[in-house]
Length: 327
Image (tube, helix red, strand yellow):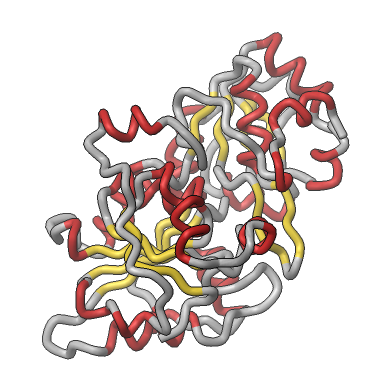
């Protein structure tokens, strides 16, 4: 494994945060306090299903990967739960937006959901980090950029006048994904030296560090972006936990005026979902059986105490937790 990665990876193979701009799964308690975010979580405990708390909310902001599917297959009860939430009040229909760090534009996200059997009747809107990233990429129209990621994600640039080139000719780096094995072996280190020497700005189209694929965890674009920033590079993060992706979702739902106390965020990742809920000052429903399942098992299980210890540093107000999203 690369020496650079060794400096940043902590216990449980979880990448530690080394940035002033972004929020970690640990400390920075003072920062949250200064932002007016409650530090102590208010855990209601394990829930049997979403129905136990559904009447408390008018809007749900729900993660996709790790909640609705695991990268390979749909979680069969998750989209059912969202449909039932939407259908419980015929006069004032509750609204659901899917908020995802997928580095893809809307059409690609919809197609992926359909391929897994998740229909558009489970949600009212989608806000993706891909769409937020595209707004940043537009700043480099007419110029050369370096795309780090597979060719299948080049739809990110569709309709934008940019040319994909190498690190020597580019004016910016766009990271949509990394090869997990190459990343772990330090395969991006040599090119990163060029980025640093040329002081190239980086747009990270997926702030996730790791994601669940079937029963394994693999590195994502956010892991590379963290290392680049830790070494002094300039990074713009396009998705959760930052405000633009949430504002875009609420605007699409026509829900900007909904009181924050009536909005529920659902997700499986501390660094993005819990931290994002905290910054948005909305309640958070934690899905424990996904990306953090291994470390919770090591700590003795997904009980209230362990989940509170995991979530508390973000300041998120926990509405409860469950291993998988069910009604």
